[in-house]
Image (tube, rainbow, N blue to C red; front, side, top):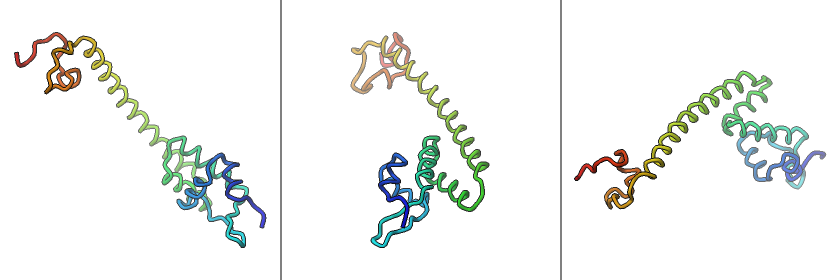
Length: 145
């Protein structure tokens, strides 16, 4: 039987053999043929599929989403419209997270600036740290006196 063993496939794709087994269990790779002694034997398309999976993960797709793409392709249909839809959704999520991170950055800058102007001796045990727990502007009167 001619083909590639798991170590060869893994090396060709630049992934550990455990990754090949994981993708196989998840249905991302077709069940390989077996030799008489039980060794897995993969065909020449397996490293290409492994590279597709890794690239799709880099684009932010989950293994479940990739499995859906592979299932469509294995069904004989080009998954381009489905992939475009998934990528558009990922892009929307990236924009949402960018806005969240921008808001977080503004909050952190404000807190850092407050920390530069607050007097540590004014921090009470109850405050723990008044940079975070007491949002009054620097130099304002304490509410308790």
